[in-house]
Amino acid sequence: MNRLVIVSNRVADLRATTQTGGLAVGLADALKERGGVWFGWNGEPDGVTGGEPQVEMIDKVKRVAAPLSPEDVADYYFGYANSVLWPLFHYRLDLVDYRPAFFASYSHVNEAFARQLLPFLEDDDLIWVHDYHLIPLAGYLRKLGCRQRIGFFLHIPFPPPDLLAASPNHEELVEALLDYDVVGFQSHTDAANLKLYLAEHNPVDQVDETRFRFKGRTVLIDRFPIGIDAAGFAAMAREADEDVEIDLIRQRVLGRRQVIGVDRLDYSKGLPERFKAFGQLLEQHPEMEKAVSFLQIAPPTREEVDAYSDIRTELETLSGSINGRFADFNWTPIRYIHRSVSRRKLAPLFRGSHVGFITPLRDGMNLVAKEYVAAQDPEDPGVLVLSKFAGAAEEMQDALIVNPYDTDDMARQLHIALTMPLEERRRRHATLFEHVVRQDARAWLESFLAALNGSSAKPVAAERPYRPTG
Ligand code: GDG
Image (cartoon, rainbow, N blue to C red; front, side, top):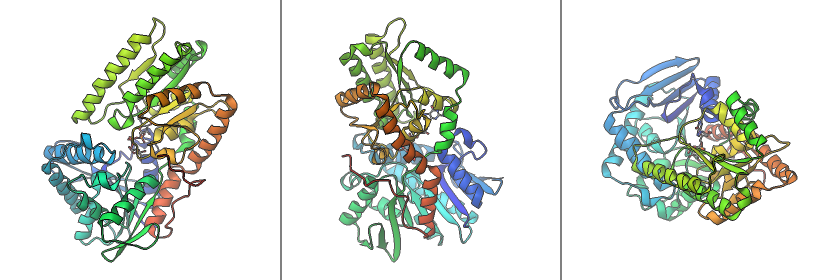
């Protein structure tokens, strides 16, 4: 079995992966099994780019944590990655803040990472690079003579050619992707967008549906939908801490239903539209007053970027005005928590909620949708209301699929979810659950590594033909 080298923007804390969720656990397990390296930024804003990385051996795994300078944290991380690529890839050209210094820093950091990673590589390693921060990494590694197989997985969406072409660096970005042996996306839509771009802009030969020849090499472009540790999350959901248990009992005694949303506070997650839809539900169905409450957990991220402080202010205003209008001394319609809640509490909160309300405007996959399904009691499950623009919607057609821009539609579907008969809830949940268990974190990992190893070009198939959702 080949050694595995994982590269991600931030190196994971390999000693505390139980708290960070299925992805880090799955990747860490694969590393521990095969042995290898996890390389990434140490997360501190005050180092020297290219400076001596900190190396720690944890079982058979080397954790290599590289420093970055304050200027590169500002221009590479908050700049090019999160003020250009993140909005662009989420179809938000209006929020792109393009500055030439950002791209220069992005290239400089990727080149520095390639140089720092090189001495840790062995001939037969499989190198797996994660996400939009590191698109040019393979190119720099190749320039340094690296011949190992290198795969790239994009966790976020990939935009259609016309949107991508609005970025001044679109040609460099796509050529950089073609330096990999495998380019993996979350959904059919994302993989199709890159193929469309290639058909329009690049001199590549298409060998078959997934393989392309470029500069004498073959690149595999396919979808590898990410999953969660479904069994682990389901088990966690059955064990509620005392404070969560008391809150859930209180809701039951009062005969109240709970709608839940959990998202990093990000403009891609469609939170204002979701709050408005909940307000509309209360307006259109007065019988729902005091009978339902909405718990939205939205921990802060990337607050240094302006667009994130704007969304925070907007949400505070919206929740305040909806609560001001509908609340009573003994009922708060929206409970909005702008802090992180531990995973051990999240899982039983999902289980105790009648609706999972997950409505991003655009999302690579959305793991919360899968976690909500995994957490349910199969005998009395809640209903998933899911945006058609989440990658998860391609696989989770038994959810109530909504258009996140259409607040009327969302309010309507929310009402259907809250009043859905038990039999239909069970039927929908059984199909969703079966899928979430089968297409779990392990299956995702194995299918990507098989493709990278060249032993299989096929990711795990969806259980039924894909129907585009728009
Ligand atoms: C990117 C892509 C893709 C959230 N709040 C808390 C908390 N969380 C956990 C959730 C879930 C994870 O964070 C969020 O994952 P998502 O998939 O929903 O979204 P992104 O963070 O945007 O992730 C996304 C993903 O990468 C994987 O490829 O699905 O499309 O954007 O696990 O439960 N966890 C804790 N407290 C919180 O308050 N403990």
